[in-house]
Image (cartoon, rainbow, N blue to C red; front, side, top):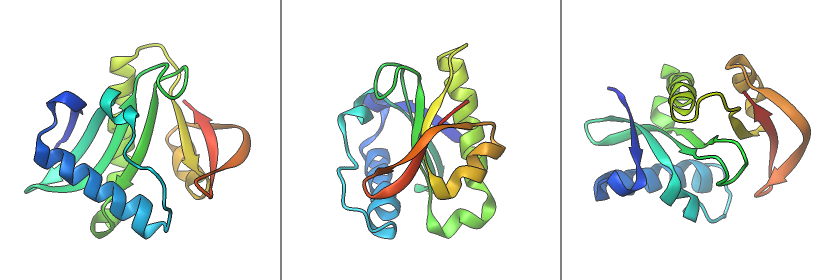
Length: 145
């Protein structure tokens, strides 16, 4: 299993299906949050996939600067519920950080982190800035690396 960084226009139909399936399982069904997951940012993103035998295990997207924030950002970070005991989330974020730094050198990286994951992201080097806020009725905080 290897991580792949794929621009939107290079995703296969199967890869795109797997992305939207995993994101809806995690962010809409599991977190009981009805919101517009599929957005125009997907078109500009590099999509980070960890797959095994056509099963998407972990996913995130990297947005270029001036898309959602002035800085590049990492978002939609998720791991399939069946694979969370393997620490793929940490591996995924380490890959995303390295990939983002390669794509956008010498720039801060920003994330909008769910607050229950504050310790996880802090251990990866991110620092919380400002007050927490609700995003789709889920507590979040902005963090920078």
